[in-house]
Amino acid sequence: DPEHGLGRGADRAGARSKHRAAGNSVRVRAVLAACADTAQI
Image 1 (cartoon, helix red, strand yellow):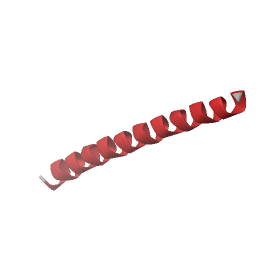
Image 2 (cartoon, rainbow, N blue to C red; image 1 turned 180 degrees about the vertical axis):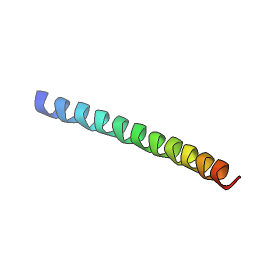
Image 3 (cartoon, rainbow, N blue to C red; image 1 turned 120 degrees about the horizontal axis):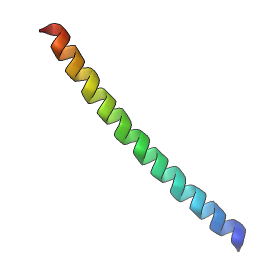
Image 4 (cartoon, rainbow, N blue to C red; image 1 turned 135 degrees about the vertical axis):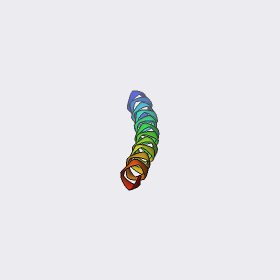
């Protein structure tokens, strides 16, 4: 079923973007933490 294949591809893409978003938020948090540290010093 082609529709099912498309759905699976969309799910995969969604999981990939979610994973990327999680990685970005972790990176952003690390940068913010570093900024907070330098601000305290």
